[in-house]
Image (cartoon, rainbow, N blue to C red; front, top):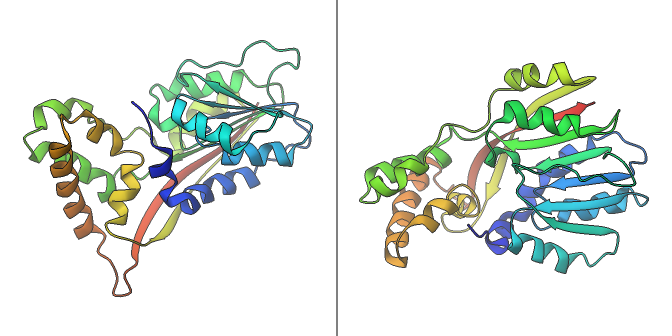
Amino acid sequence: MSWSPTQYLTFAAPRLRPALDLFARVELDAPALIYDLGCGTGQLTQLMAARWPGARVVGVDSSAEMLARAAGDAPSARIEWQQADLATWAPPPAATGAPQLIYSNAALHWLPEHATLLPRLVAALAPGGVLAVQMPRNFEAPSHTAIADTVLAGPWRDRLALMLRPSPVASPAWYFGVLSPHAASVDIWETEYLQVLTGTDPVKEWTKGTWLAPFLAALADDAERARFEADYAARVRAAYPPRADGRTLFPFRRLFMLVRR
């Protein structure tokens, strides 16, 4: 499916904050080759190029729409943009050798088989290289469970129920067990951000740029999409009611990991 950069960037600041928090924890002096997997609109890719001016920096994403926005915002000869399926991606052989950093913010939760995917990414690093990953772990919160409730309660149930799946992100301890046999060091932590949102139905607008989007895209027509969206909006409005000042508090948990080969 296609992704909307405009919808995703409606909440650019809170979406960028965990990416910056992870970025600040990467301890590398002068990496020669960096990949930003699931680079989206390329905000972090640009920061990588600025922080490590001697590096070859490659932003990789499956979305042509996101990459077009990234290339338009960062017409730098030092950044390369590649469209690829992240589930099968591997760094190609290059004169510069294996990457010293593979960074992925809010992308790998869309992919299955983390037990093989993440060790494969670690193995692709140069010795001493770092895999830096952030994934949302908010799938048991009303913002996400209300999507399933809406699917199962409506006339679209038979068509959309097959799209429902368990939480795609496991516990920190599970990831430590998967990664520690392949790594010199593994650092994993979680942070719950208390996001302060404004506007009408802001939690619905937030998920509309990510987890809700495939369900809306799968519906038959605009009228049906509008009915589904209104049902979901009512559910999350009740779960996250606006305060008297009009702002909505939206707690959001995220998982971070730094894995050194």
